Figure 1 (spheres, rainbow, N blue to C red):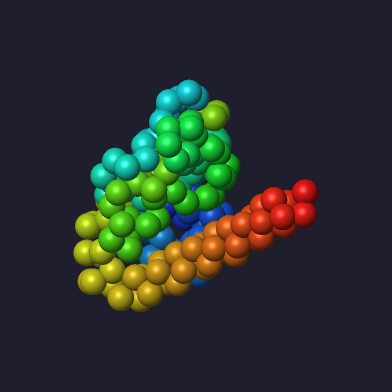
Figure 2 (cartoon, rainbow, N blue to C red):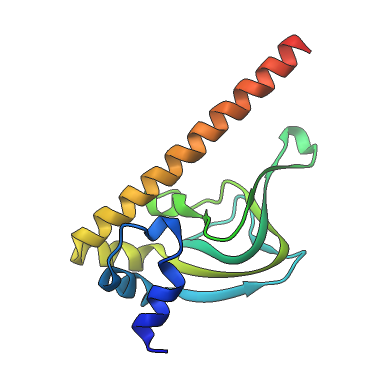
Length: 159
């Protein structure tokens, strides 16, 4: 399998890359690193500095946040194939806002923030498509969080 066909085969099915042409997929894939992690380990930890963004190719992650006053951790999301992790690093937020615990063995592609931003500066069409996809992902997460907060408020008030 050629390098380009490998890039297209891996990235084309991922919704995030739906608007990318094959040449763009090749450019983005050329910067990616493949990474695996075993169940029970952490891919990233809350409050650590991070410069990587990930897309899950396989497996499942539990996204955990620390509760106030040392009351443990709460799972706030579960991520699976095709989903992003660490995307806020592209917006300049390098301190991890949550931990990602590996539930089932995962394989990922990861990108370094500075390498992606350099690519976007050289190829603004790729940068625009990438950031548009990122905006859609973040908007979806915001809508989901709003619904969760509304449900939690309703439950707390009308319980």
